[in-house]
Image (tube, rainbow, N blue to C red; front, side, top):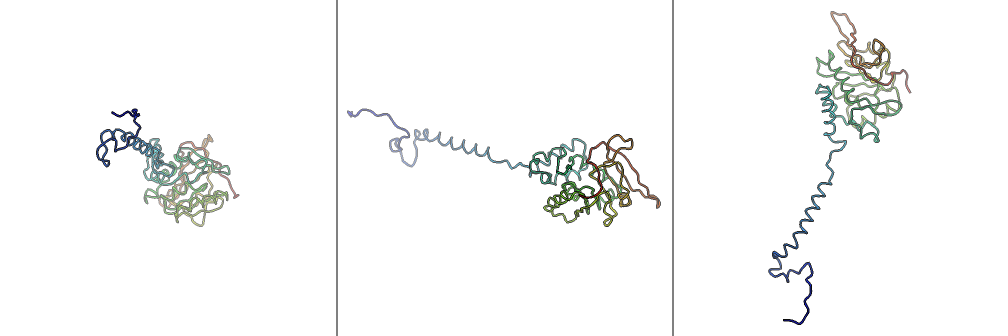
Length: 278
């Protein structure tokens, strides 16, 4: 025995003191090293859990959830649902409001105007697709939009039309829509700065006409520019004067006789239809 007093063991123990080959840990060494391995695995698991999932506003999943809600609420036209699932609505609203872009709500876009609810956009376009020409062709044909706003509805219409002509009377919004739609690179959208109540005679007639502002009467220019078999959808004061409703007008032709057939649908609330430009 040695007279040297015993010393407490210190950890970690050198592999040479533990015995065996220095290149291979003994059972005692594994007992020391195992907790360190577990800590590394736990850290890796935590890092994986904290990594971004990739589901943001630019994710197709976000738009598909919006479309699923609209389908559950009664929007059935799959062509319209697909178009709504394709267009990036958050790119058409102010960044401060982008988090609400895929909720079924209207949002301010400045100058006293709003971007319509996705459900209302979808409903109006679905009504257009039930028109005579659209039913025959399977698309909206040449479409006139009154009130470009931020350009969102024009982007959706473009996916279902042969050509879209969209008019905006407010120059700042016209310019904003041009910026928004430039990224889409859809050559068949033509933006016009002008008075929407006058329509756009140089490009008439139109197979489909849709308005994003409501008035007390339908401007006669719109009816004059609606092609035979075409359909117009606009928010207007109801015939009984009680609030605003979606009005549908079909340009029907029977044995050379032209007539415009008006029907009224559900109540809506749109910004007022005004004349002139600003």
